[in-house]
Length: 355
Image (tube, rainbow, N blue to C red; front, top):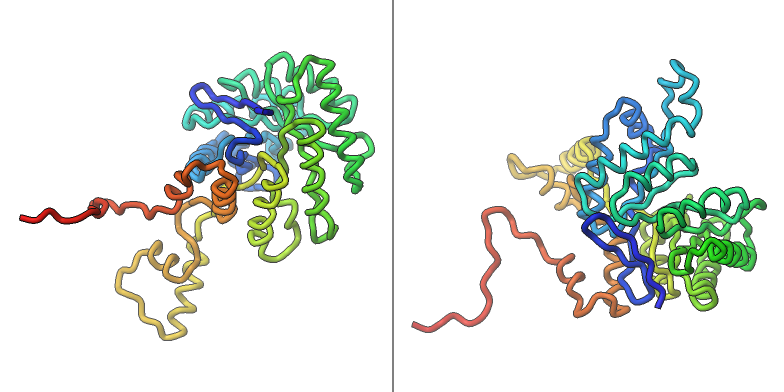
């Protein structure tokens, strides 16, 4: 049975066919997050730490750390900051140190820069997952020696010098090539986690069917674990959570064993709360005096003012239960049990003893 072992200093995550689905939290990534990139440029890691804690609390099995930041202000002062090979290596090392100082969740080191990958591997305690290698010869020769040197598993993305093929047979062939080249370096198949590349279903109607077929082939013919960028499937469409919630259990049933995704439902902000309160007042609804924002947003179905597990995590936990990867439904019951409010105890059960 194929099992990919990923470890922190004190905790082990197992990606495997007979294991609960592995959620790789994607939030610690400055790409497309302007505020986070600006904070990192100032040496402020508070949002990185908050994202690490929130994702771990939501149930992430592994935390991905991506160092792809652009330091625009420093770039104007020093041209070296225009080069990711200069920016990312020290940034990755610091991010890894900060995250593993506050959570014991195993890590995934994510960068296209060789120096950042090596710095992340050097700083990480335990056995992190490396993200990633592709079928491009230059990338294979650059990343696979690092995988061997540090004895870590690696995400293998099914594209090569020709780009991303729409033909699933081509993507399978690229994955097979990576597995075979890894074997040349003495890297076993169980340390390769293949990303077969999920296409947006809004652009390609067969995208879901393609990835399900690919995942089955990768499992049966290559014996490898699989992952994907889960939200790619719903890109550009309305109600993306609805599509993601259907896609993830279906992918799991096809044999997918992990996904890179956001496990957190982001908190409702003050602006949205104020807008809803104005709408409620305009409708003539009188709220209790001193009503807290958390009670208000829950009453009107807006979510929560605090980070919490997203709907995708609910779908994954249900699928784990249905596939017997949550024995007796313990995780499902724990996830759905209402938290005890401060100052309250749980109600006693059973018959009252007669006097």
